[in-house]
Every structure is written in structure tokens, then in C-alpha cells.
Image (cartoon, rainbow, N blue to C red; front, side, top):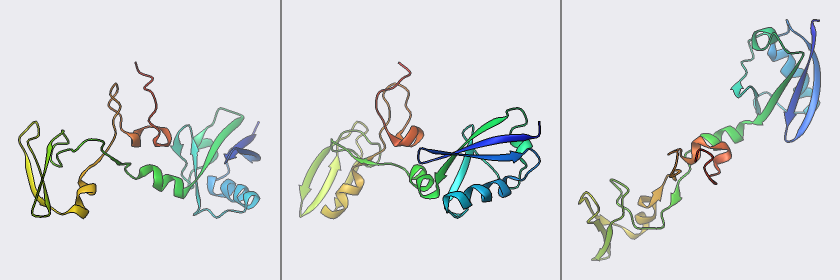
Length: 160
């Protein structure tokens, strides 16, 4: 039983490719990419949550199953996922520790002070204040940030 089926799933569409266990992944990828009219530099391939290396043979990835599912993702999606997701804070926060602080206006400049640790940041220009007020949202229960959660979507923690 040397023949196996790879099920490539890209944007919700599954395409089956029949392969041999001793084939290199780069050759299998090329067969698939011809069918979807994409370039190898535009997508990446995942199996069991891990990126598949082109230089490996199929048997090195999975030598047991007769049908293997492979998820195909756009490279642009990977760049977006790896980018840190920062949101504007609803409160005025200290840029040093991230705790709530007071805001003072003096001579057309802003001063942030009197946080929990008595930090003080002064002479902030109006156009710079928004950049200092961005936070990386964390789950209150498991302390994971948006980057660690699938598709950067923070809903309700399942660990409670």
C-alpha cells in the first residue's frame, strides 16, 4: 500500500492529490499548486499544526495514515498572525508600567503621572499620546494575549 491521498484544504475548498510515500513534498506541492494556480512563495503548508518542510519525503511526515489532511494558508496570513495586535486603552495608562494614571496638560504638552508605582512621563506631544496608550489585550483567566489565540480573536476563555 504505497499510494496515499493527501487532502489539501485552502480557503474552505478541499482537493485530493494521490501520492506515493517516497515522493518529496516539494514535488507534491507543485502538483497541488498547478491545480490552484498559485506560486510556492504565496502559500505555506501545515500538517498537525506544524509547517511542512519541502525537502522532506512524505513518509518522513506521516508513515502511518492512508489519508493525510494538509492545511494551506496564504503567506500574508502568517505575517498578520505574527504581528503583535495592540489596541487603544480605554483608560489613561502609564507608558512605563501599563497601570492607570493621571493626565495633566501643561504648556500644550501632556504629563502622565501618579500611577501605582509613581512613575512620571512628561513633555509628551499631543500627536504622540495615542501611541503611548496602546495595550496588548490579555485574557483575565489564562493570561494569553491575542497573538497566542487562533486568528487573534479574544472571546471567552475556555479554561475557566
